[in-house]
Length: 191
Image (cartoon, rainbow, N blue to C red; front, side, top):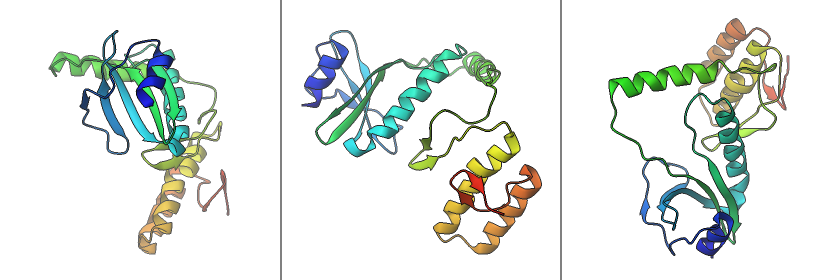
């Protein structure tokens, strides 16, 4: 079922099964899938997680707009019965060299020079399996303290981390991020 759907979405003939598993994916199954136009990279997850793939696809498209470094092209996002699949361009990596790593560093720096008028993004996404809020803000310390550090502290607290560690984290957050002193509450900081 999934191969047929992916073949139609790609407009290619696709093998009935993946050629091989690809290492590196700790959350979703990652495979190399052969097509008549060359291999593709496919991430597979339960259909209920299709939204995670939608956010990832949007993020990859956004990163490619910076034109600073090579980002795999999003080829398809499909749901077939119990599975969702994100299909990306297959990129063959060469050997690691000092020159290649220096180039990557320059490209990442160039990507980070592309800035918007606000911090955050037009949609929430995930970092691993953890939700990541991206409510836009014009205040970087507030955004970072609330949506990154504060959110992680709240998560750690819910998961039972020692309250002394949580309090130290909140104090650090207050010292470095100003107003981000309270608990996460839907994008606002409670005081």
